[in-house]
Length: 65
Image 1 (cartoon, helix red, strand yellow):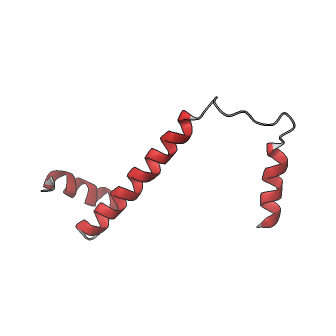
Image 2: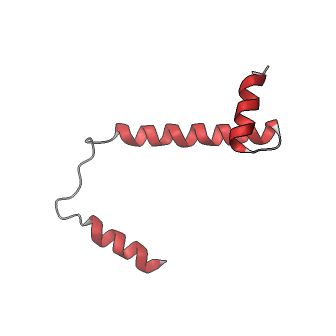
């Protein structure tokens, strides 16, 4: 059973119309949040190539848009 107080607060914060929409939104947010956390856990553990130029990569991405 869902906590109706939480449901009401979540609905007022999100503007969704149904519990199904609310649950789907909550699941998407949970997944996004956990994936982001997993990326932060990699901080300092990855070794980039010495000649890696992140600015050049960013410029290439902009040019392809």
